[in-house]
Every structure is written in C-alpha cells, then in structure tokens.
Amino acid sequence: MDKIRVTGGTPLLGRVVISGAKNAALPAMVASILTNETVELENVPFVRDILTTRKLLTKMGVQAEVREDGTATLNAAQASGHDAPYELVKTMRASILVLGPLMARFGRAHVSLPGGCAIGARPVNLHLMGLEKMGATCDVVHGYVDASSPGLRGAHILFDTVTVTGTENLMMAATMADGETVLDNAACEPEISDLASLLRSMGARVEGDGTRTIRIKGVPKLHGCRHRIIPDRIEAGTFAVAAAITRGDVIIAKCAPEHMAALLLQLIGIGSEVGIENDCMRVRGKDPILSRDVTTQPYPGFATDMQAQYMALMTQGNGTAVITESIFENRFMHALEMVRMGADIRIEGRRAVVRGGKPLTGANVLASDLRASASLILAGLVARGDTLIDRVYHLDRGYERIEAKLAALGAKIERVR
Ligand code: UD1
Image 1: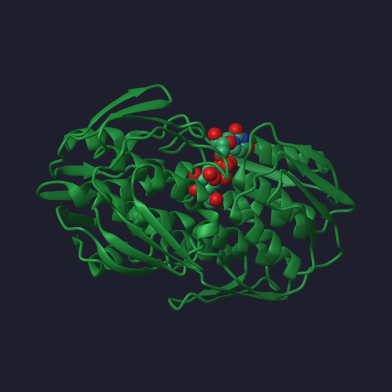
Image 2: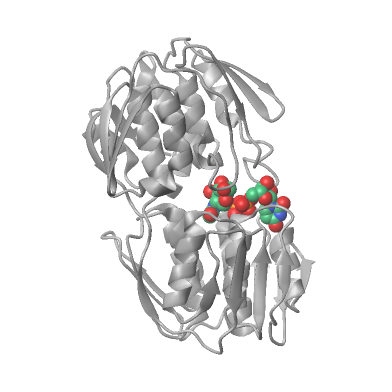
C-alpha cells in the first residue's frame, strides 16, 4: 500500500492551481440520473471518490466517462438499475446521494446504508425522513434502504440538523415531484448552490439555495446540460494553511476566495498575510503564528473539513488554542498522531486544547480519514526529519496529485510504493 514521506523544514514558495470541488462534483454526477439526456461536466477533479461514483453509476446502466482533463460525460438514458451495493457504499458514504435521483426518476431505490465511519456515526435518518414526507416508503432491510413510491409529491421538510448531502438528496428528489417542496434549515454550502445551478440548467425550478430555505417546484421532465464545477475550497484552504504553517509565500490560483471567508479571517487572525485578486489568493505565513480558538460550524462558519489542518497549524502557535468540533462527535483521530510527533494536544470531549510552540519531530503515522491525512502532511512539513504517512488511500479519495502540487512548491515529499 502507498505511503507518503515528508521531510520537514522547507517554506513553500510558488503558485498552485486548485482543482474542482469533489463535494460538488459528486452530487453533480449523480444528478445525471434525473434525465435521459447527456450531462457534460467540466472541472471535475480526477480523484478516487469520483472514480467510485463513476463505477456506481455504471453499475446502474449510466454511461459515465470521466477524463483526466477534468471533463465528464454522463448519460442515463439506458439506466435501469436502482441498486447501490455495500461494496461501493462502504468505501464512499456519499453514495447515499443516488437515493434522491433514483426515487425521482424510477420511484424505487435499493441503497446500502453506509454504517459507521472514522469520524462518527453519521446517520442518514434525515434523508429518509424527507423522502417519507414526500410520500415514499423507506424500509431498512438487510443493511439496505429499500425505498419506493408511486410518485413523489411536494412537502414541507424541516431538518433538525443541518445536513449537506441530506439537503442535496432531497433537492434532487423534489425536482420532478408533484407540487412544491420547501426545505427548511437547509445547508447553505457553496456545493449546494452549485448543485442548484446545475439543476436549474437541467430545467428544474429551484430557488433560495445559499439560504436556509430552499424551494423546489416540481417539473415533469429534466434535460441535459453542460456545467462547470466550482473550485475546491477545502483543497485551497489546505494549501493556504500549508503556506501559513511553513511561513511560506504561496499564490493559490483558480480558487473561490468568496467561499472561504471564515478560514481567511482565521488566518489573518493568526498573523498570516492574505491578499485576494479575483480567483487568486496569496497567503504569506508570518512569525509568530498566533494561537486562536475556533469552532466548526455549518457554512458560512469554519468548515469541519478544515479542522484537522487548522490543528496542525495551532501546534506551531505561540500560546494555547481551543478547537471545538461541533459537527462530528469523533473527529480528532489526527490529534493522537500529532501527539506522536511531539505536539501537546489534550482532547476533552468535543474540544481539543492545543498548546503551541512544541517542535514536531517526524514519525510513522496513520491517516484515519481524508482531511486527517492532509493534516499529517502539514505537520510533517514543519517536523524535524521524516514523517511517513500510512493509509494514504484516504488522501487519494479527495486530493488531486497533492504530493506533486506540494513538491512543485518546494516541499520535500514523495510517494513510497
Ligand atoms: C458533507 C461533506 C463532508 C463534510 C460534511 C459537513 C460531502 C460529500 N461530504 O458530509 O465533507 O465534512 O458535509 O460539512 O459533501 N446527520 C444526522 N442525520 C442525517 C444526516 C446527518 O444526524 O440524516 C448529522 C451528522 O451525523 C453530522 C451532521 O448531521 O453530525 C452533519 O452531517 P452532514 O452535513 O450530513 O455530512 P455529510 O453530508 O455526510
């Protein structure tokens, strides 16, 4: 299995180009189920979750091509299957996203429940609650959701917790339902708005995305379209933190700074210099790195997907920072690996107390999830000696050529096969 070796001590300098957002491309690909015409996507990142989604769609009879140049062509005219098997869902929880489109197009779905994962329980009860409100019957049998409906109808759905894929699933389910669906306390993430604009290009009537209330008026039929995926704000954020932690100077190109306000304000607060010009930002890391608390929140708050990377940064802070994880109950696995590198981090329930200023030393560490892998690379960039990161398949799920992009900025990093 591949590992990544990082040798710390080099400030990152130069320019990096950001890929398309994995978490926007996944729902965009599955939205192709909603029509028998072709959906063409641009700026799709060539990462493992995207290839898993292609496999899943192919199994359902969708003709799905994804190319390394970032284009994808999807046609579900011949789609007949409505099965998302455990083998694929267990490697990628976002597979649950097929549920909404399958119900909208075929009125039937047989989708494996994802089960537990490294960052917490992550149930899908709200996805099912919404579909039931729209008139579907959802049974859990042999580990699968067995859903069916003679025809979905519009409903008023109130989420008691903000859920990103739950909002996306129900938006897609509602596109061809009979009447209007209102999603209340919906997620506001930029990936939601990207899906909404794709659905509008397909002929759907969606309003209010980007706010807590989304309204979808059902239409009889959707058609094909061409759509460009937004830049990946988490990849861009990871490079911004890489610049800050190494006291480097990095131009992050083809990103969407307007989607990253919470992180950029936090970086300015810890002393980094941040400049923005259109779709480019320049991040310059400064000494000292100031320790500052943060709490993860749904968008527009500080993203849980940046929490691990920020923790790596705070190990180099000049004081103590409290990091509170309010989205997932068990998302501090990376902290224990950072402690093995010499960091001073105490976990108290949902809070991590990070005492900065301890020099890190390279170690053999295990990645537990996608963003944890990235945070261990960041820690490795400032550690003395070599850090060898195991289980990097997590990293390959969501970062496109991360080691090549970091190496081009001067990082000493290589993949060990
Ligand atoms: C998405 C992102 C993931 C990000 C997360 C939070 C994708 C493919 N993944 O994951 O990168 O970390 O948003 O920003 O876009 N919950 C319930 N019941 C449900 C659904 C969710 O209780 O039916 C809870 C979860 O356990 C969690 C919280 O809601 O505590 C938020 O989870 P959610 O937004 O659904 O995460 P995902 O959509 O899976």
